[in-house]
Image (cartoon, rainbow, N blue to C red; front, side):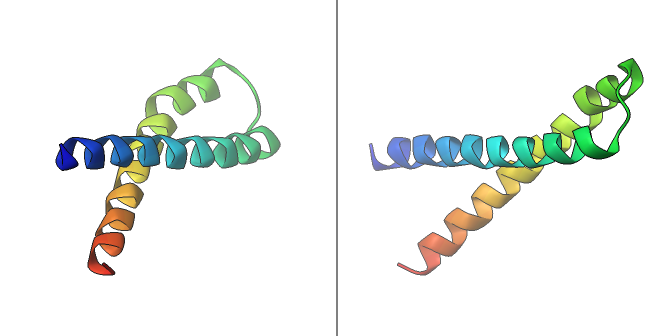
Amino acid sequence: MKIVIEKIIYFVFTIVIFIVLWKITSELWESFVPWNYKTDLLAAFVVAPVLIVVSFILASLSFKVIKENK
């Protein structure tokens, strides 16, 4: 049961990190990248998967630090 709760907290934490990264990226994207269908495709197929991977990495590193500090 403890492992299931830990996994749920991990995925919630990952989603929160992804949302924060997505908002930061969207603000930077809107201010520096011209809007057209090519840049939208780039965002959908390149930037979004990179953000997903980065959010999982940051969440796992955070959990590792939290567990080591117990």
